[in-house]
Structures are given as C-alpha cells and as structure tokens.
Amino acid sequence: MKKFDTLFIGFMLFSMFFGAGNLIFPPFLGALSGTSYWLAMAGFVLTAVGLPFAVLLAVSLVKGGAEALGNRVHPKFSTIFMVVVYLSIGPFLAIPRNASVAFEMGVLPFAPESFNKTLALFIYSAVFFGIVYLTSLNHDKMEKYMGRWITPVLLVSIVALCAVGFAKLNSQFQPPSGGYEAGAFFKGFLEGYNTMDALASLAFGIVILTAVKQRGVNDDKQLTRYTMKAAVVAGLLLALVYVSLGYVGGKMGGAGTFDSGTELLTTASALLLGKSGPVLLGLIFTLACFTTVVGLTVACGQYFSVLYPKLSYKAVVTGVVLIGLTLSNMGLAQILKVSVPFLVTAYPLTIVLITLSFFHRFFKNPRRVYATSILFTGVFAAISGLSTFGLNLGPILTMRNALPFASAGMDWVVPAIVGALIGMLMGGSKSETLEQKELKAS
Image 1: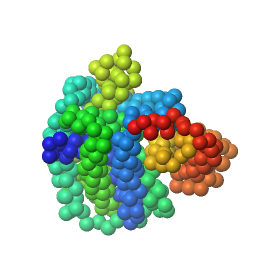
Image 2 (image 1 turned 90 degrees about the vertical axis):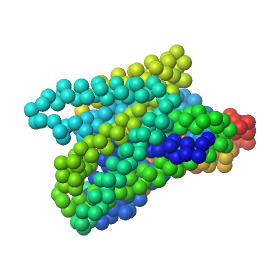
Image 3 (image 1 turned 60 degrees about the vertical axis):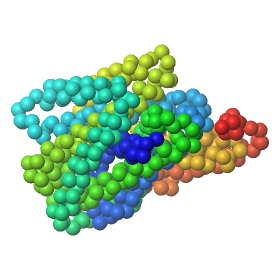
Image 4 (image 1 turned 90 degrees about the horizontal axis):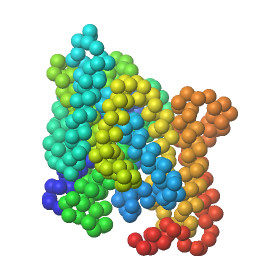
C-alpha cells in the first residue's frame, strides 16, 4: 500500500460511521450532563468509539469475518443475527433515518412555512437516493470519493463550527438533568448505542477489508494490520468530534432548554454564525448522512449478494435504495421510535459476542460457552427491548429490575456472565469442537 492509503481509508471509514446519530447525540449529551459532562462523555466514547473498534478488531482476526463469529454460537444464529443486523443498520432503520435527518437539517430550515413538506421530502429523498445509488454502484471508488474528497470538507466544516463555539460560548456548565444526575457514565454508555456504530462495524468490516485488498494486500496478518491502522484513524477523529460537539452542547446548556440535538445545533449555529450558521450546519448534516448511507448500502450489497448468489450486487443495491426511499418518507420521529427498542436488544448481544471472541482460546468447548451466554443475554435484552417499546411485562419487568446494574440499563451483564460460566462448566469434554479444529487449521 502507498504511504497515505491507510490514512484515506481511515477517512473513508470515519465518513461511513459519522452519520445522523453521531451529530445529534453528543451535543445533546453535553447539554443534559452539564457538570457531569466528562464522565458522561467517557461512557459515550466507550460504546460509540471503543466498541466499534473492538468489533473491527474481532472481525479482522477471524477468518470468515462477522459470520464466523456468529457461527461460534450456531450457524443458524449467525445467519439470522447478521441478516437482522444488516437489515436494521441498512434499509429498515439507519438508512432512512439518515436520509430524513439530511432533509430536516439541509432543506427544512430554509423552506417557506407554506410549502408542502410531504412533497418536498419525496422529491429530496428521490434525488438523495438517486445519487446514493449511482455512487454505490461504483463502490471500488469509495475511498476516492469519500476518503479524499468528502471527508476533508466534512471535517473542515465541523472544525469551523466547533472553533467558533469554543471562542464565543462563555456560559458555565449547568447542573446535570435528564437522567445524568446519577450514574452519568452509564447513561452516556447507553447513549452511545444510538450511533449504531458497533452494529455498523459488523457490516463495515467487509468494506474495509475489500478496500485494503484492492491495494494488493492479501496476507491475513497484513490485512489485520492495515485494517486496524485505518480504524485507529477513524476512531481518533470520531472521539475528537464527539468531545468537541459535546463541549459545545454543554456550553449551550445555559442558553435554554432543548428537546433534541438537532434543535440545539440549529440554535447554536445561528447564534454563533448568524445566517450562515444554518447553511454550514446543513452542509455538515448532508455530507455526514450521505456518506453513511452510501457505506451502508455498499455493505448490504456486498453481504446479501454473497449470501444469496442468485441476487446480483446491483439488484441488492437497487432493493436497498428503494426500501430506504420508501421508509424515509415516514418521517424521522417514527423511525427513531422503532430504532431505540431494537438497539436496546441488539447491542448487548453484540457486546457479549465480541467480548467472548477475545477469550475464545481459553474455552474447552467454545460453542457451549457462546450458546449459553448469548441465550441468557438475549432473554434479558429482549425484555428490555419490549419494555422500551412500551409493552407492560408486569412481574417479568419486576424480576429484571431486581438484577444488578438494572438501574443503569445494563441488567443483561450478570445473566451474560452466568451463562458463560454455565457453558464453561458444561464444556468439560476434551474432544475437539468444530471451532477448535478451525482455529488449529488457520
């Protein structure tokens, strides 16, 4: 690889990760956490940066990638889990969410009050997804489009907004509110789920590995090395942007009460830069959402065209774009209402799966450990997801709330550990499992 290839692939990975949620949640966290900002941001960065990095590392170390990790539980689990992940971070949640946010931040602030919002959203999303479609079909040029052109413009725009905020905002951080009064770290930890980046890492791994292979790298150790270098570049940029946006949000806490990160950023941009502020903010949101949608579309195209060989890459991309176009016209509020319960369910499974992968070599019978730990985790993660969706689970919810860390939204931790211990106790057989044979063969 050439000297700057890793840097530009890192830029591309940053732009794929940095979408709507990555812009919205850090400043809102800053405003609500107030004097507990640094503790809350530490929790946020752990799940929004550290966990995606761990996922990429785990995927790069295992032959077969994310699917091979899932196979350690069971091949059927792997297929179902990965299909659900790709569909949710792709056409059914993340893609329409980003398109809707791009419209609400890039168009809506400049439209007259009398205009037809429904028609405007349809026209905008049709143009937006048309460009996404054309870009995704040329996925071999993603590093050029996104790493060398779009990401530098995006970063300069964000730096400009934050730099003005640092210079002009002199308000003191307010007392914490909105759940940050106690346990700010764990609250920030859970807010990091909303970026969806740990799930996206399961999908983006194949995109990054493909980009590295296109530069003539085929050795497994070299692939892991360059993938991790690119991930470090992306991770550092993400962390710096999160901290900066969150700090601006914290300084805006004294300027009023805000219902969302979008409202806070809109107010801050106008306050700091006048009429040009919303224009700059609209550019940031449009570029961030566009690059993420392209990355997710390409990832879905590459995964499903391999999983179902009868479907061509072009056919999958076409389907993803059409579904994303349709759902994005539902509106942002409805999309976010569906996404939160899913994230509460999917993230614990992902965290446990990745954590177990780093201890894989110490298990006598890995499949039993994975299966029991994932089963116990899944039960309580599903309870949390159904509860978040608004279902009254009665005594089941009471039982869940009695578990350690339940008040912090991490009731699944103890069941996951208990499940792993049970699997280890059941795995007394010294006979080689399929996973152990594969590990030796590799």
